[in-house]
Amino acid sequence: MISPPRYLTAFHPKRVSHHFVDVLVIGGGIAGLRATMALDPRLTALVVTKDKLQESNSNYAQGGIAGVLGADDRFEDHVEDTLIAGAGLCDREVVEMVVREAPGHIRQLIEWGTSFDVAEGELLLGREGGHRHNRIVHALGDATGQEVMRAMIARARDVLQAQFWQNTFTIDLLTSDGACRGALVWNERHGKTFVWAKQTILATGGAGQIYRETTNPPVATGDGHAAAYRAGAVLADMEFMQFHPTVLYIAGSSRSLISEAVRGEGAILVDANGERFMPEYDRRAELAPRDVVSQAIADRMQKTHHPCVYLDLSHLDAATVRKRFPGIAQRCREFGLDIAVDRIPVRPGAHYMIGGVKVDLQGRTSLKGLLAAGEAASSGLHGANRLASNSLLEGLVYGARAGAVASAEALAMSDSFEIVALENAPVAPPAERLDLQDIRNSLKSLVWRAVGVRRNGPDLREAARTIERWQRYVLHQQFHDPAGWELQNMLTVALVMIGAALRREESRGVHLRSDFPEQDDVYWKVRCTDVRE
Image (tube, rainbow, N blue to C red):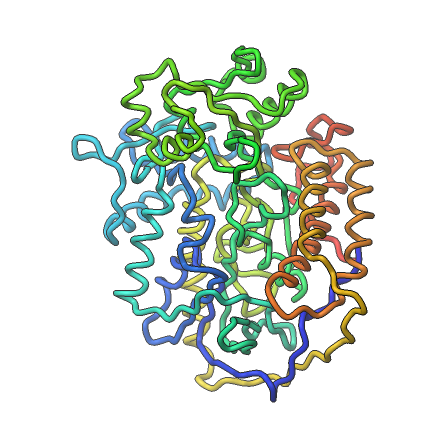
């Protein structure tokens, strides 16, 4: 692997402005906001977001939040469902902790103004793939993330009066003497700024945009993963990208998620010939975990030589379907589809990055002064495949824990700030301007083909060679805006993922190696960290 430069851009301490805070939170999704809410009010804090606050994977989450809230449910069942979905790689201690803290976090969201769906005065609990009980709270039918983020943003702004820098790109983490000291950020108004912080919390979300087919918004380019990697933090589980089985597939349109809750309500999957196929692959049929359903769909598409399969809700009550899923109904209506009558064309798409910066139970990383939470982190909760609706939950639990640790650490530190004389010299510009969009499109297509639902050694090795060629003339350039930095981050993360996928010579969870089709518990029942050359 081509070693990326330590810093992506040139800077000099005398030519860059400086800003000082006790705690820097990078990312404004559910994990970042929950971390912010856990900070002691005596501390100064800054939340930096790449785009608007509302533009995050959290905001687009349709499904809901899992928690043991029903009278017939038990913590032990939620734990067991998570462990089964994770295909033997979950950290049981982490799973126990997250599951037992879930109900308290959900009730806290209600106290903060989140309006979850109710029926006869009780929370309406849905069911999704891999869950044996109805335990998923939803909001606005299929817009849970949007409602949760609305309530959390309102509290962070109005009650906590948190400081936000929106539309601000985090270029790199600043490090000195083996510790994180903050970050170098950029926005159009002020240019580059050193943000010096006693504690930094990384909550930058996922990396779905590395793939051509993805449910993720444009901001999900793995920036936090790449910045942490350059800073020397340990990454783990990078071979595990979860593919959502049902992404709306209409040529020429952006890919839209069709929530797992649709199958939870009784929708079935049929192939191009109208045949229901999931019972052939798993006794749980459409409610099998996501890795099983995605791989079954990929197999069926290959057998039928058809680019998608179809979700069928026509056997369900039409009025109930349209009321339960208003957002999905509206999106499909734009393409002339009535979800209560017409079959919805779907196929898998990159959805959730299980791998990330390795953290302990409190959200600490291997780099002193740096914590991580949410999709940017790898906690061990998800193992080799995330159980549906455990993602927002993880963001809440680990966001709260990381915020509490950062708060305690910052309060214990001296009240003075030390500026480190960091400098990164400029390099000569290239003779010819690169077409960044062309490289980006080529990368996304390559990763989709080689590191998608199915992988194999020869394709992975060829993809690695291609990306290494691109890295030779992209990584060591110094760009001046996010388009270039994003591409450098995507190239870095893609190659780390490919390296991890090559090393794991078995099939487990979301990682399906056609050349090693069996799960190997003798050699590979272990979580892997990144290998640096």
